Every structure is written in structure tokens, then in C-alpha cells.
Amino acid sequence: MRVFAAVLLSMSLMASPMFASDAKEAGTEDTPAAASTAPATPDKPEAVKPAAAKTENSAIESEVQDLRSLVEEQRAELESQRAALKAQQLKMESLEDKMGTMSSEPASTPAVTPSAVSTESPSESPAESPAAPIGATPRTLSASLLPAQDDKPGPLYFKIGAAEFYPLGFMDAMNVFRSTQLGTIGTSFGSTAFNNTVPGRLTEDRFSIQNSRIGLRTHAKFGSADITGYLEADFLGYQPANANDTSNSNTLRMRLYWVDVKQSKWEVLAGQSWSFLTPNRNGLSALPGDLFYSQDVDTNYQVGLTWTRNASVRFIAHPTNNFALGVSFENPEQTLPSSVGVPGTLNYATQFDSNSGNTSSTTGVNNPNTPNLHPDIIPKIAFDAKPGGHSVHFDVAGLFRSFKAVNLVATPGSNLTPANTVLDTIHGGGVEAGLNVELVKNFRMIATGFYGSGVGRYIGSTGAPDLIIRPNGNLSGVHAGSGIGGFEYQPTPNTLIYGYYSGVYIARNVDATVTTPTPTSGTGTCTVTTNTGYGYYPGTSVATGSAVCPSAPVGSANSADRYIYEPTFGIHQYLWRNPNYGDIRLMTQFSYNSRTAWYVPVNTPGTAHQFMIYIDLRYDLP
Image 1: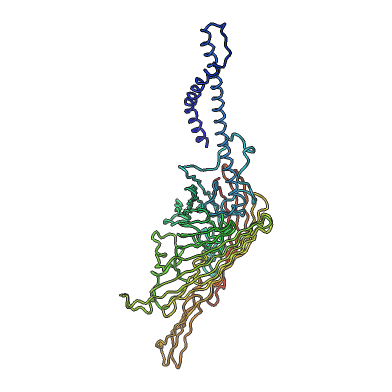
Image 2: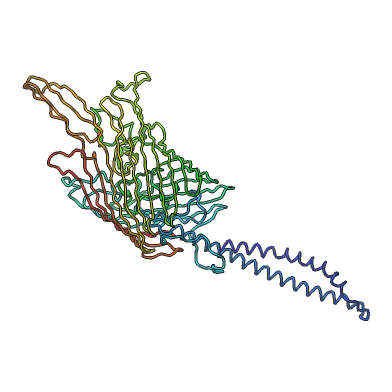
């Protein structure tokens, strides 16, 4: 900004000769008129008149020069005032964006220009860009309240043409302790080890900076349209071999990358963003600070949260400042994890995502490109109000999905033709609702709920399936639901206390195949029932006569979870904070995670559980 002011001042000084020339010409024209009005002095010699005129011209030129100097001084002072005012406005708006926000994933996103994403006022809840207490900070100050000159640096930003660019991110040093071995800093809630296994008998402690983040936010005006761009990346991507042995070569990973255009009451967003199914804190904004994904330090957040980060296109209307509605078309991914038992030896690996957590395969062998039928369609509405000065947010979203696969039971052989190929298509969907209410000043209650069929993919980090394969080769959706309830309280500007309880329920969906195999010995018949699907119990083997039949088939894997829950409590505490230089804060999280499988063999544990302690020291960019 100082450079900008210096350029303006230089341009003004370069223009001074032109002003001087104009002023001189004006003075020359005025001089005869002034002389003509002078009283006649016939007693003076004629030669005296030119000298008097010259003296008067000199006086006028001197006054003009003084006036010009005064104008230049006023102009320089005005530019200085404007620069100072702009710096103060940037600081105030940066503070307002950070106001009362303490998310587990801050994006440190100074909103120094009107947001192109939402017409609603900035969230007063803890959110992505923590820095200041919850409360209403005005966006602008009276010029009389601002200092004429401020040598302090402003918020980090630079300008190219009409676009402003704001670096964002943080440097994160995290330590996590678990009572059972899991292997990553993000919790896979459906993979908690049973205590009769090796991982279940070992504790683990991990120290990592993988969750550090870098990004950039841009804003520009194009005619009457507001354009906002957002880019965010962390270091939780594919890991090279022996990454943790020597150099810790954490790999950069794109998290968010989108552009939003808003004009009047209409808005269009395209790129990779949080799913429309992710609960909001404010309107239908895609900015991380306007979303609810908990204050947890865990990079997989709270069990039961509905979320993805995928490519999408969304269209939003804002009929009023308090009401918004829209629809999002998002990248689909039909999912069939290994917890689902497939009939016989059928191989559906090329038609479904296995939902593997593998991050060490550079080719993503466990996550093939699936033949999705159409984008997932998510309509959503949101309502915001401030009765009695307390913020209230409510949103409801729907989900419509379709699944399509070649029926490998009804389709013979591998030489497929249009005539002998049998396809099966089913549809699924669900409903999400979220409520975020400030009951009293700085104290919020939060509740979210989600339920549907074929929706497991959206219940993050649980391994919940979308569907099963029936014995006849047809598809059948799996019902699942989740919910979160909790509070967030900021008793002081530097302290945030939060707590949640959440759970996930995944329903059974099983089918049976009955066969009559030849007895292994003896005479008589054998009838064997084999169960498949999700959450199935062991089959049966019934013999007649003296026949000895094959053993009864086993039940489903203990990864087929029935119920998963997690209570969480945590505190965020600022240690140091300056709007010009960023902040340092200490964040903690204490969680207990438990899961119960549909089927557990005899004499084995019925539940798997663990407790986790996260301690995180974070430096946020200003």
C-alpha cells in the first residue's frame, strides 16, 4: 500500500509543471485586468508602469506557487490518509473473519472484500479462521477514528490487476496417542482393532506435521459480478516407500480448488469443494469457515459427519438475506468394500470402489475408476436468523444416487455382447439436516442427522457400504444413518471448549444361497445354506441319513460394523496472537471410539474400542 501511495505521489509531482504552466497563463491573463483597474497616476513617468506591473505579476505568481505547494501537500496527505484507511479496513475485516472462529482445520482466510459466496453476515461461530472472540465487529471505522499514518504491516495480500490475492494456511505440529495401533494421524473409525489381535494389544504414538496447510484465496469484481477463488492443500497425499524412516517425504495433496461467481441473487460454484451434504454454519457458503465439520484435531473429524471433498458444480439462489436454496451435482463413486460378502467367486472389483484406505500405491490400485451412471444430485436449503441477537442456522439437504453394474450371475462368460449382457440398476438416496443455535452469548448447541439407502460413502471414515450383491447378481442398497450432538463454548476471546457425542448405524442386508452338495462320506443328502451380503451370520449344513456334509459357511468379517460411536471433548487455547503476524495456539482433543460388529466368532471380543489424545501446536498465517 505504501508503494501504491508513493506511485500516486510521484505521478502528482510529475504533473506539477502542467499545473504551474496553467497557473502562469492564468496569471498573465489576469494581470492587465488588474492593472487596468488601478487608479490613474499621470504625475508618474511612463517608464514606471511596466515595473509596477512586473512587481504585481511576481506577487501573483508567488501566491500561485504557494497555493500549488499547499495543494501538493494536501494531495500527499490525502493519499496517506487513504492508504492508512485501507490498511485499517483490511485489518478490521481480517479480524472480523477470524472473529470467534477456532476450527480444527483453520484456513486462515482473511475476507477483506465482500464474499462472493454468501450474502449472509460472517459466521460468529468457531470456524475455519480462528482468531478473535465471538461477537460483532464492524467492518468499517470512521475515518476520524483511524490514525493518519500507520507504519505497521497489514494483512498478507498482494494485488495483480483488479484481483486481490490472500495467502492462507498454517504450520501444524501434531502428536497423537492411541490405546490401539491404527497407523495414521487420521482415525479410520471402522478399523479400530479388537484386543485379541496384534494391533489391538499395542499402543501407538505419532508425531507429524502432515496436517500443515497452504493455500490462496482470491477476489475480484467483473462488472457487477463478485468472483472468488479458493485453493487449499495439505501434505496427506500418497506416501513413498519408507517415508517415515528417514526424510518424511510427506506428499502435497489438493483439498479444495474452486471458483465462485455471484451476481445479484444468483451464485454458481465449480471445482473441488466440500460436499453439499456437509452441514453449514452459515447459509450455503462453500468457505470452510461457514461449514461445520467439528473443532476436532483429528484429520478425519468426528464419526458420523457427512462429508466428501469432490469435484462438483452447484447453483444457488438467494431470495432473501436469510434464505438460500440450491442444487449440487457431485462426483459419484459407487462403493463396495471388502466387508461385504459377494456370492461365490464373483469379481466386481472393476465395477466398484473397494473403499480402501491405501495411500502408498502410486497407481491407486485399490481405488479404480468406477463406471458411475450419473453425478450424485444434492438439493439443499438453508435458513439463518438472529432472534434476540443470537444466531440460528438450519439446513436440510437431500441426496439422489444411482448404481449400475453388469450382473455377473445372469451374464454368461467373458465374451460379452449386447445380446447376452444383463445390466442391473438401482437408485438410492437420503436426507441430511443440521441445526446450529447460539443459546446464549458465545455458547452454541449443534445437532446433525443423516439417514438413507445406498449412502454409506458419505458417512466419512467408517467404511460403510453403499450396497450388496444378491445371489442372483442384482444390486441391493444398504440402509445407514448417523448423527452428531454437541456444544461449542468460548468463555474468553482466547479459549474455546467443545464437546460432541456421535454415532453411526449400518443396517444388515443379507441373502442366502441354498445348495445340495455331495456328502463327503456316508449316504444321504446334504443341504448347505450360505449367507452373503453385509452383517450376515454363519450358514447351516444339514445332513440326512449317514451323510457327512461340508462344514457350515462362516459369518461375515468383523469389519461389518453395526454401530460405531465416539464421545469427544477438547480445548483450544491461544498462546499469542497479532492481527499483523498471525497467532499461535495449543489445541487438544480427547476421544473414545468404539465399534460393534454384526457378527463376532465365539470366544472373541464383541466390541473394539480405543481412546485417543491429540495435542496440536499450530501457527496460523495472519
